[in-house]
Amino acid sequence: MADIIQLLPDHVANQIAAGEVVQRPASVVKELVENAIDAGSSSIKLVVKDGGKTLIQVIDNGVGMSHTDARLSFERHATSKIRSAEDLFQLNTKGFRGEALASIAAIAHVEMNTRQETEELGTQIRIEGGKLVSQEVTTTPEGTSISVKNLFFNIPARRNFLKSNQVELRHIIDEFQRVALAHPGVHFEMYHNGNELFALPVSNLRPRIVHIFGTKTNEKLVPVEENTEVVKISGFIGKPQFAKKSRGEQFFFVNNRFIKSPYLHHAILSAFEGLIKEQTYPSYFLYLEVDPTTIDINIHPTKTEIKFDDEHTLYAILRSAVKHSLGQFNIAPVLDFER
Ligand code: ADP
Ligand code: MG
Figure 1 (spheres, helix red, strand yellow):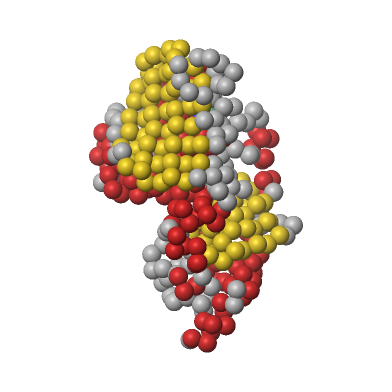
Figure 2 (cartoon, rainbow, N blue to C red):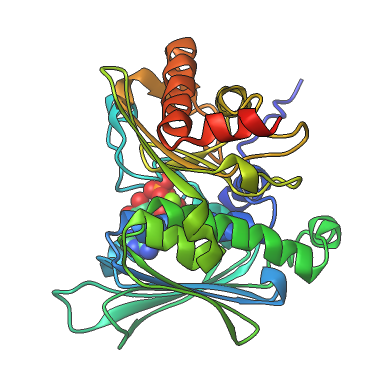
């Protein structure tokens, strides 16, 4: 019998991997903005057209890339962020898989302009469907600008599955807000079809929340602060009377990374028990700092789920911290009286 197994060509492997990393335009936004953060940017601009279907562009003022790195950055498993498996247990960057740019370039038309501070000239690279179109020396501002056009142009089934521009934009805004909330010390701007949607100056957390969610938010916020061996908690919860029927203002960040955790969400709800109506949700913006060796963020490609060594303890500490804040601000007695 003849041998029939072959290694897939890189661009095919990348296209398959892309299916996991890039679900929709918002996934591209998340990856590009996180790269900009990892590059130490103090200012990040996001430009989107037609819900991201036509254009997603991220412009940063971070460290930029050398000519060689600019090309390498689009290779699969090419990363400057980890060097060994041990590094996985003490990550201080958002990225580490070295998959995002390769995946995105496999399924879109990508142009990158990048320059390092020390260089006079930068690099422009164009890649379409995983194939290098051109690489040239160019004049470009310090930092990196990546534009991603015609997402899923070579996967019609995926492209047809995208929702309306409005819905895709909503997902993009969600991702944008998550990163902006995780990094109040970074200046962010966002534009859609030429309209400015957000302009967020460098600030602390409370003004950042208010800039994003509106001036009325300010009076709703109650600080949460807790310091234990296991976890350091900071941030804000919304007062119970402002709980809403719709979800949307619930944010957990673990070591500055937005995560989804139904379990920890439950800890918050249980702290609010008796203070809010059923089927309503309190707002929260909570930042947990834990020893990086006690979490595993490698369990999901988009890294929004993580595994904690000791979830139960975390649950208890979080619940009691929130209860404490609610009590301290004299919220509980008033509402008990009303009931
Ligand atoms: P990862 O972020 O997991 O390393 P990516 O595919 O997202 O993988 O990026 C590959 C590499 O390209 C990064 O490790 C980094 O060195 C470089 N890179 C990507 N985006 C930027 C950027 N905006 N500024 C500077 N370097 C970048
Ligand atoms: Mg990345």
